[in-house]
Image (cartoon, rainbow, N blue to C red; front, side, top):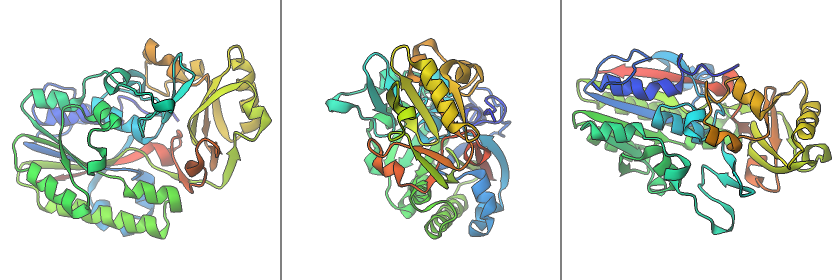
Length: 368
């Protein structure tokens, strides 16, 4: 499966929303005009997961729905940047969770925005593209982001949400209230984020009791937001990725064949970027293919790029951010690294791959 960039992907949504607000932008998704637009971004709300538990989210399940693809890898940093810029991963450069910084020998955590030894990464340099929020603000549209205060001013927020007016809100009730306040303005472009569903899925698995409880919270938030919108509003619910519960884990740090010739192990458990030592790329590719044959797509950097995993084009300056080898499980396998990533290694639910359960996200609609 290759994400359908330009044919019903998350990358199509940002411009389509701007077009609905009257800006000159491609409206690939044919979104109808509106005076105010609100996007509810639910971390981890895969389309297949929602369909499987529609009874736990009756409001969402009853909405007009279509399905988009997240893009590769199906992970938060990549999808948030796709939604924030309208560009494919190969164009915006957020090509994974843990990426090598070319020429340094270091991995960069794009979610936590951290480098080793206290080094600092400039968000404007790592992700220099103009955001849709900057474009909206320049056009006179009130562009607001509603999310917990802990994310305000972080490197990831700067890289993805440049141009927004940040409205900090902690609880579900507070976020609903902030959305209603922001949507009183006209024109308005409001995004509200909820991450606890994804957190529950990682720790206890999607479909677990805690995950279903969080799905109920999301359903209630969506209903209350929709019920309080003024006339002329368009309300959309989508996600950054889906999730799978894994049944097999391979510790890539403890298998000699998987460490030989490897300089850095980046990415994440369902979308590994493997950076080879100089001259060892072919050896690493062969070993990883042999170990994971029948369980994962294992491609060279060139093969992954040519196959369109990151979009139709990858900027030359971003190429070395991609692993020499990219390993993407399609069974219920997680490729873990417990020494360097101990929390990830104990997860139940994972995402990142090209499977439908991880790629497909809903686009749900309410209009007033």
